[in-house]
Image (cartoon, rainbow, N blue to C red; front, side):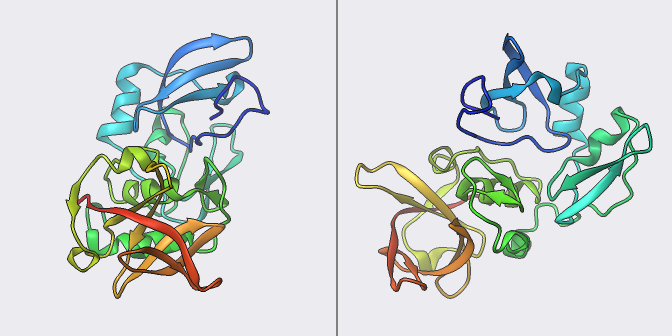
Length: 237
């Protein structure tokens, strides 16, 4: 998904297999969309989607969603070709397209104790602004996809995610899987990560990595100094 209607425009997010959206407008070879799952708006190439009914889209997104659990998997198309899937693809769409999927799907829906284990699947994935896959992901893409794989929908951007859930006062009140948010000098939320046990945090910064965290912020173990200033901690589930 691009910010503007051209291939040189900023990447703002990504659509995975099975992601559904509403078409808002069209300019030449580009369509402006709003995603059903997280109400996010951007532009995609008109060659990269297939039209289905609103009822089908809502069913895939909200009623029958099931997500692939392998970093990379494959789906067989109607023409017997193999198409690549990445972790978190909504394979509930397969039946609507006469595709065949025989891979494994997520089964630990709603299990908060497994959030960090799921997030760890993305460890060492390179940082990519707007990315949502193990091949490239940003900080809020990591948290959103981790929660998505547990059947929980949260907004796309860190600043939006900071508006949901219950605020905690101290790190020691948190549980693994709670979210920590960080701001810049202007007070804007610019970063998010998943809290772990014993004052560690899993987040995307250069790559998906694990660092220390204290009441000041993230302490980067490579450069031995704080890299992000803590603003708030949120419990989503």
